Length: 141
Length: 60
Ligand SMILES: [Zn+2]
Image 1 (tube, chains in turn green, yellow):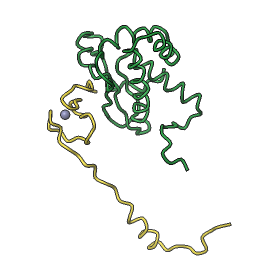
Image 2 (cartoon, rainbow over the protein chains, first blue to last red):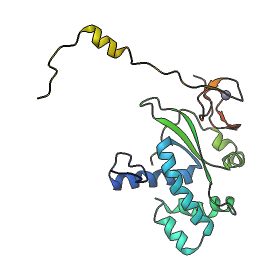
Image 3 (cartoon, rainbow over the protein chains, first blue to last red):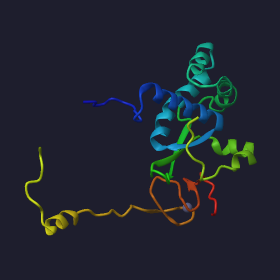
Image 4 (cartoon, helix red, strand yellow):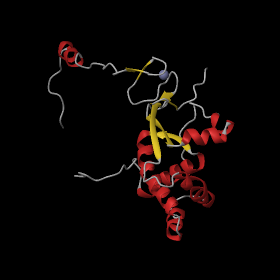
């Protein structure tokens, strides 16, 4: 029995599952907003929120914790310099999942995973972020 | 090996299949564009959820 065993397995071995989630979380920090399946979004959300809290804390140990998870260094510095300051004073709940549609190929329920202040980020960026299309497919990195 | 011992008549087969029913989705009205949409989902017609623009709708 696996009663009360938390977390999703995604039908993958542990190493591939870890790599998948690291890729999703890194892509989220890079793009501010990503589209994935609802299950992957929910799983990535809890990891990403923990990393953002590390970002707000900002000490050396936090930096090492983040660097050990995120797959590229520039993304980690982006988390500490751009993302974390926006959430100063907020205790969790940095991310939002909006369920959208069922994917065309396999009817998997899809969702958008974004920062709760995405609207203001989008306005600041202007045109750059406005090109987001519905057709955009799943990001795995 | 476990195998059916007797053939079922068409009537029994069809009575079994008579219970395979579809379900009507529980739709709600989009507060923005009044189109019917699935609850807890972004509206497929106008791309909003809770008043936020979530999706860019592209015409094909
Ligand atoms: Zn609508």
